[in-house]
Image (cartoon, rainbow, N blue to C red; front, side, top):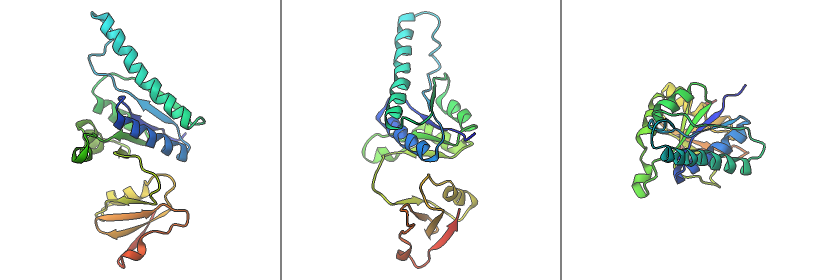
Length: 202
């Protein structure tokens, strides 16, 4: 059975963009999408302050329900599961990465230059996940290439091997620091721009 794509959501705009990207990728790869909304540790749903806990429970369940509805409307045939585990978000997502095809998270999304920054959870997941991790800043359409940072190491080669679905089986290394991968059906790209291009087989 194909491992699911796991996406973390928290009800924010940045997690919505990650959700849209993850759902599209899951549909292309024909694998399940698993939506995770991590509850803070204080969400024990027990003890005193029952009214507050009940309100928070409804809100958290609403985040997952809305995310699921968005995906099912866009991809009605996609298998979608969800969970609301409690704990430290990074630890929960790292545990999920053990059985995930890919973990998808939104960027911090502060606007301007800040939108290029990663939150502490994303940084921990990127650095320690057992699966590939995708950080989504903006969802774009119409672009025909994917740019992959590369330094010639086995890890950077793996980045080309695990490119998103729909990318042809070859990508072109334009420089030691950048791999430009054509995403058109014909496989045409920007290879002619750089005479030192070399092809990397997936």
